[in-house]
Amino acid sequence: MDTITTKMSREEIFDLMKKFITEVIGEEFVEEMDISPESSFTKDLEMDSIEIVSFSEKIKAHFGEQIDFTGWLSAMDLDQLINLNLGMIISYIEECQS
Amino acid sequence: MSKFLFVVPPFFGHISPTLSIGASLLARGHEVKWLGITPLAQTHLPEGGEFIYPEADLAEYQDEIQRILKRQDDGPACSGPEVMKLALEETYVPFAKMMMKGLNNFVDRWQPDVIINDCITFAGALCAHLKGIPSVTTTPVPPDVMGDTANSAPKIFEWQQNLIKGLQREVGIYSDDIHIHSHQLNMVFTSQTFAGFEEKPPQMHFVGPVKGRPNLAPFDWERLKQVTTPKIFVSLGTLLVDIRAAFFQKLITAFENQPVTIVAATNPDIFEKWPDNFIVNGFVPQSELMPHMNAVICHGGFNTVNDTFTNGLPMLITPIAYDHFHTAKLIEQAGCGISIRYKRLRTDELRTTVFELLENPKYREAAQKIRQTFIDAGGNDKAVQLLEDFAKTTRLETV
Image 1: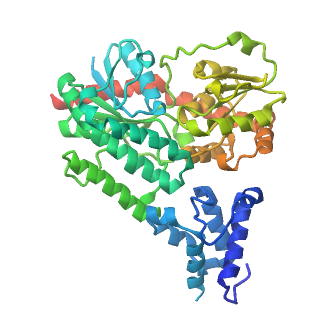
Image 2: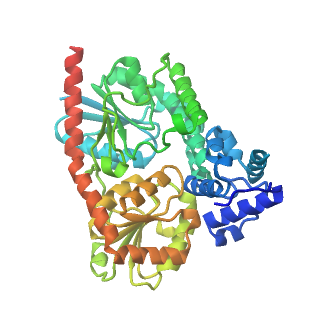
Image 3: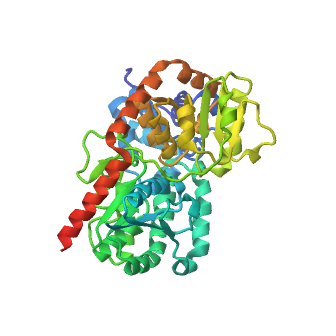
């Protein structure tokens, strides 16, 4: 894996996340969705646990040890999980980079 | 002879295996009754069994019960974490509270030797604990659906524990231990191999699928006999009413004019006309039908899953909500079927997957292996033996 040397902007992280989501749930289903930072993971993107796991694996493969996405998720309570949206993930990745 | 009381939820998939074991217990001369929060038609009960619906003690909760039952229709549209809340916080715990009064009153009157609670019907085990009556738990689905939350999601584990301890305190159990399930005997209606358990807690016994509950649904066997193409059984179970039409529309698009016959258990009223290669009935004698089938499509309701692998058939599972995803994972692990999530199901993929299941023998071979683990688990005979031994041992202990 390439090491990330330059810090990514919010827009770049958003595009990358969108790419991962498309790979996980399939292009034709993404076309029907209007993915934005407000998109909720469970409600809007309708990702199930298996899809979230493969999404996490993509984040891990890209960022390496720098970002513990699974650990971050597992510390959440139910309401936090229900309300989790793409913007929160972007902010988390942004914080990890700084 | 002993008196057994089954405490059941208003969900037929959970009641069904208790009716089968109950039939075997009655045949052995035991007294068997069921108690639930909604009435159950007498036709479902094995001869000699009685269903207790404590109407007067439930009167004050009628609106709330109906509201919670209606709320279950939202399940398919809910995400995983929302379903956890819907199930435990909005359904199981409130139902347990509402059932306690009627259950306590009936138990005082009838004095059962053993209370058998379904795994989501906590009132049974709580009542048994309060009154010092031996209790057994029945688990129709592979356990461990939520995974190891204590380690993987500590806040979710804490939420579960708090809800259950809150319920226990409300019914008068002030203990830090959890008493919603039996600590002595928990019978699971699948095999240990299929459930994916390398080790199991000592009280857990995998008895495999059980059968024998009355099912008087008629069926046009003559029509089935004339069928020459591979037969695919399709079931959505008894819940999930709202998505029925959408699901069967996909099936029609995928299999109309294809060299297969679809035998579907659903209310035919959802469409005016069905294709000629579809045999559709609201209720079917599922266990009798299954040996005539070549493959099965279902969302993962556990009684259909058991009937499928009892007959060594390959399955396309289209998980929608609840524990379906866990079951789908187990099926893919065992290699006896293919999982396509309902929300990501395309008709072309639906068609090619079914033909793959029919034509590639590896799925059927894996299904046959699961079938053998089911047979080895012992079924009704094993369940009855466990219950009789349990009743005998606990009686000796109380003398």
